[in-house]
Image (tube, rainbow, N blue to C red; front, side, top):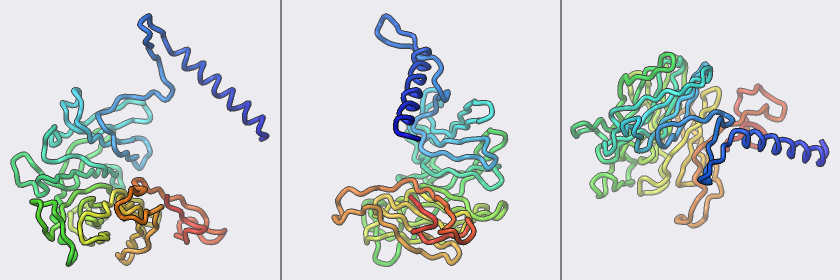
Length: 315
């Protein structure tokens, strides 16, 4: 299309879009406006929606709302469910997350393979082991999910993590220690339904855990620390390849994406993202990796991982 044609289409879209918006607006004598229906039908959620997950059948979209809550939620954090067929939103507050609770919902949210459960991260810095009254510590919350309705089912607790020799953290008691605080961020599901496993990015212990979703047993700890002081890299987000053979972790504070080989349980390559030379300079802070799959240079099946030059790209 010629430039003039594209310009004409753009002007028409802008003109008709403006007309639709104006037709839904009522001017008040107070200089304010009342807005009618807005395209897309936005609906209110609980405070600070931080992550979304889509059900395997594509019907439901769930958000984890990790703010201070609202009056409607009794100031509890929640999971909200959008039914894409009806357009309705239902909110499900979690009583463990009242304001000033020791634990908070965080950014991890994922559906089980069969769509009957949701996994969400719950984190605590002040009482990670859940020793105090009304405290459950850090872990993965498992919710049942049935026809758009959510209910708490169980908690998979996360232990303090033994750091590698020579590495220390001051997060417990503000003194050097060799145990990292479990603070789960992103969650990814790998493996088949019924035998699925969870990848959990532990934001404050610089690692990723591979664990059994049913038993909670930790099968592998991927150490992603790059300094003697932990935390330093702050793993925040995950993406998994289609064949489940590799995962990619966004290291928020290191301005890097790191590859995990899930077949051999090893840490692979690192992709730096405009990483500053000065270690105290502001970085790019990657926080939402997404895998784009392409047939590599016309060779090989699409599900096969290929070199970044002409295959799978993460950004």
